[in-house]
Length: 94
Image 1 (cartoon, helix red, strand yellow):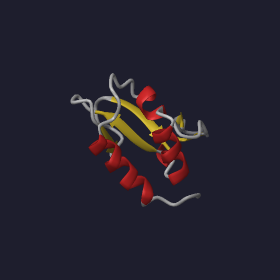
Image 2 (cartoon, rainbow, N blue to C red; image 1 turned 135 degrees about the vertical axis):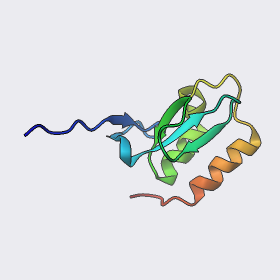
Image 3 (cartoon, rainbow, N blue to C red; image 1 turned 90 degrees about the vertical axis):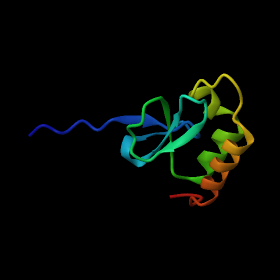
């Protein structure tokens, strides 16, 4: 039997490679905001990150998220606070 292909993606926070389904997708919208894409199918430039607080904080503090999504300007305070609030609810390690 043939094995089904499982897409691999790298985490923008730690650069670790994982199955696409085990990562959270973030997408840059047409308005330039960054949102969590729960379905994984929203249009726009996307990037992936582990569901770990350490990966989220590294991505936000080191501006990796802005580079990966090719943002022309830094994240707004509201957008940044929303992502940090989501990150605080995540477990430290899995």
